[in-house]
Image (tube, rainbow, N blue to C red):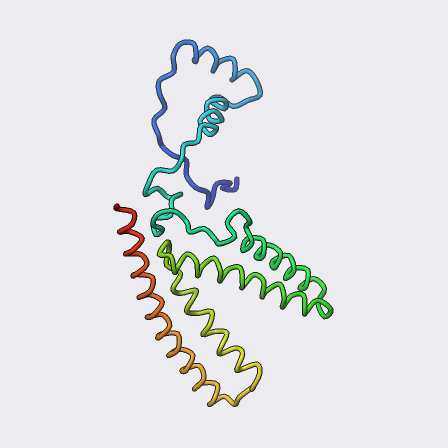
Length: 191
């Protein structure tokens, strides 16, 4: 017989509270029915969800305070831009030759929405997005020059070194700006 649970997660080994006489009687009734024993207890336990505790897996330990609001707060413009861009990219990919423009516009919309959210979070000190904000311009610069000029391999290698140096300088500046904003945010939260 094949091992059906190979690679599956193990169940939690939490102790269950002792069953009362009434519950034991209910358990016997349930055993005779089609449901597995303890099925109702497990579903009741899952239904009672509690908010995540600070420091638990579901909370963002890297974030400090409330998420910064966009200037157009009630309207989720960035999220809509990302969604519409993703849909446009998929449709452009499915159309092949005729969808190239739609795919490029979709990728651009996703990029604009993502950069807006990450830049807002980074500059407010909410969460560090240094790596994303560093790599996007460096990769864009390198790719743009490669696609437009199509230089020989030696020039391409020198251009790659230049893009890497640009990324290092940008990383240091963005990291310093984030740490300054984080200090201000933490100080304001303590007041």
